[in-house]
Length: 74
Image 1 (cartoon, rainbow, N blue to C red):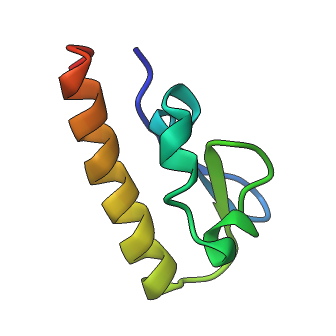
Image 2 (cartoon, rainbow, N blue to C red):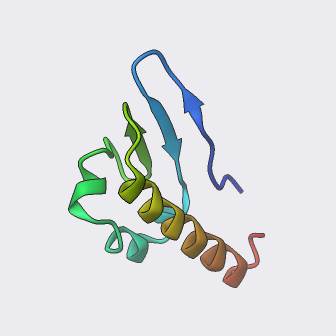
Image 3 (tube, rainbow, N blue to C red):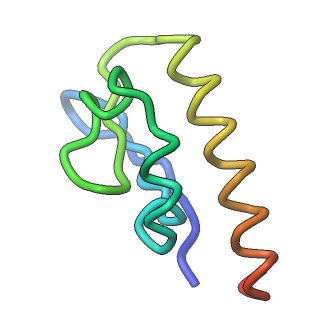
């Protein structure tokens, strides 16, 4: 089961985090500021460092680990 990745592109760094896609209730945990960096349901794109959004993304990642463990996917 795919969980997450980091991909460096020419214009930005992408962080596809799959738990919000697999668990729609996690989508409601995403702030409007982070949603502005999401072209879809589960991938965030960053051109510059943003500690506040990285902290939020870290929290989503931890919540995703909990969701995956609850479903025995990890």
